[in-house]
Image (cartoon, rainbow over all chains, first blue to last red; front, side, top):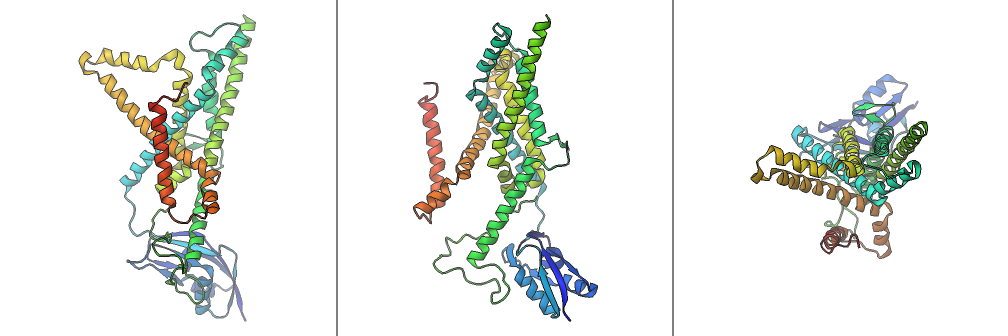
Length: 236
Length: 166
């Protein structure tokens, strides 16, 4: 009698150890606890020192490994169809990380400051405020008026509401818009890496290939985009 | 008197709501373009995204204060005056500090605007469309270099020949 195993693979897995097991890349559901435990311990991939630190594994390959261990199962895939696996052997240096953070913070600070100044310049905000002041108060503004102050407060409130946090304290439980954009961006990057792997033929597939297949004919090695060597892992 | 106060309140409310909506408008574009995820992705620092957002917020507020209150406060003049008073005359520290600040601010603002410009160009898919139209397969990196050099030349010409304020 065959037992049904439900397999839910993750799309992006980062491993700190060279051996990656099934329980690291997917979650299983099976009536039989023993089968489940046996399957969880399958070694899905082994990163060799000289190898690329990134690979794409097809779910078919995982199913093949599972069937080799327990022939009497039928696997139902409910997760991703490809797994992007990455091996980060040495922990990243904190000072390097921090210098990058400082650099990006500087770019964001001066860049957005410049942008909002350019925006104010575009709409000639001082002239605009002057005309509105004259319209309402029927006299020329002298120096700073209430308008500039209330505009700045309004802007600060608007930004805070928009980005949904004051300092590092969230106002509501929702993710901030940049966090949402970050997830979308990561998904796009993962998808394009997986698709490139499929096209270039270095995806570890179910039957026939063992991941070392030659790239497409007509695509010279020099111009082939190889994302395996890169280490632009996104979550730091 | 009452009318005066009423008018001031009207102005305050109107300008505060203008501020809120301007912030929403400017930042919606900023988020849609998706610059911050790219910065974070390129530097592997997605965990620090909250700090980046804070930098965005403070940068915008600083820019607002500098431009909106420009007429009344004259920050640059006050700064020079402050330096004159506190340091000996000949050293001209205020000038050097000011120049250094301008240099740093210029470089970082330039990086940001450069990324913004190309991100907008990419958002409308102009590069992929061109690539497909003229079946352009190799040398994408060269064309990007070309874009960067073009922007550099354009920017220099703009400032040196004074294309602004014609």
